[in-house]
Image 1 (cartoon, rainbow, N blue to C red):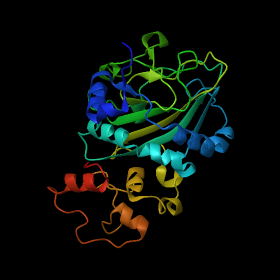
Image 2 (cartoon, rainbow, N blue to C red):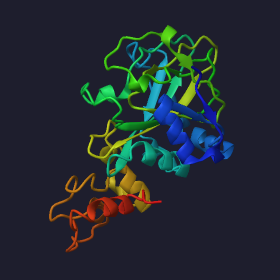
Image 3 (tube, rainbow, N blue to C red):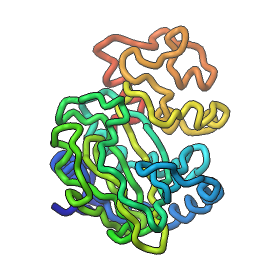
Length: 291
């Protein structure tokens, strides 16, 4: 089964429908070329300084550069892309809120071998989440064209409904080919892996992942984006970084202060928690997820 492609004007409802059915979808041409150019310029010094991986999973010919929110204003725009966030909200609607899980450039160099086929949600200590209960919605923005020859991400559409801990191979997969500026969305339960790069050029993608707010972030955003920088960022981005309660009583500071209030140096308000009946609506509003 090939990966379905949608146009940006298809909307979040349609994108979420395809994700529910296939576990993956490509939205063509979502990132403007100007934004990609700015991102390349901003991240180039960091990517150039990144060493290749040391094993077959991260890739011995692959560079993985994180900390994108701190290092690139253009990356912040990708993190807060309205269509991606609206789609993620639908995919993870069974939970109160979600937050940023990781940011990373994945640059697969010539000669790279296939990455083992895996599920990203295995990062949570291989916990056996119930089948159909999604805990992540992931994006891989194409910084270069993705082709089968240069290492396009390999996916198995529909595998988000498979049993857990299966051992699958490259032959079970399909390449998620797409042009630069397009974005592959896929769930944490989808079996996938980086493809082999048989070309003479680097295949680069921007991996931005969101997860339920009651799960620990893979990339520690509180240290990756230090408080002195976070204080300069917009409220909605700070909440996505994790400066927000993840559920009724997760993540508050000292005297029941909202994490964003603590970051901004504000005192606790008398109604920090509110009633249980008010919590879902309040938390979604604070996280900017009510639209």
